[in-house]
Image (cartoon, rainbow, N blue to C red; front, top):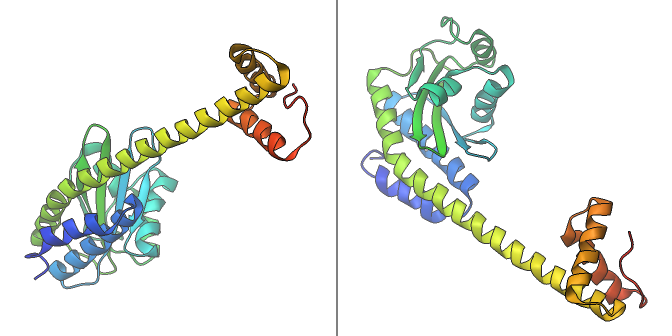
Length: 241
């Protein structure tokens, strides 16, 4: 039933979650549910998203899924990082028997995680994403489960791209609004200095810039201070180096 409605469920995730982090968390829940139905065993899932010039984002179907994924960063090794570099699925049938990534797999096994499957979700120029499935039972992911989880990732990739684009658009909108607010504050502060010091707009702005450089504080912060003093303080020179 879940497989038949998978595309619809993935689209619903995008429509129902405004924040990218919420979308990723719900995606990990859906993927865990899907893998559990395929294997007949309880399965956890995490999503690792890495974008250019942005911190890596992790989301999981539960705290243990997040811990298992984040441990890779601590030891600088693991199946998810391998997938991120090579772009191919990685299967660990039993963490107590597999010799790869010894530190990571030892820690995973100590926490009771015996089977791990990491599959590429997204491999674009500006973003990569990985789905990592885990189970407390060994040899849970047979060939059929590996193929099914890979197919899930292919379908989810289209929705993931849309989620990233929407988040980037929202980020651009936030940056533009912030820039507009900053420009407004600076213009108001410049006007106050022009009135108080009886100088030109260029001279007032140069004074703001001078104080900003001297104090090593952003121009917006200096402008904010001037507005606050103007609103609540006595008249007089509002800027001093």
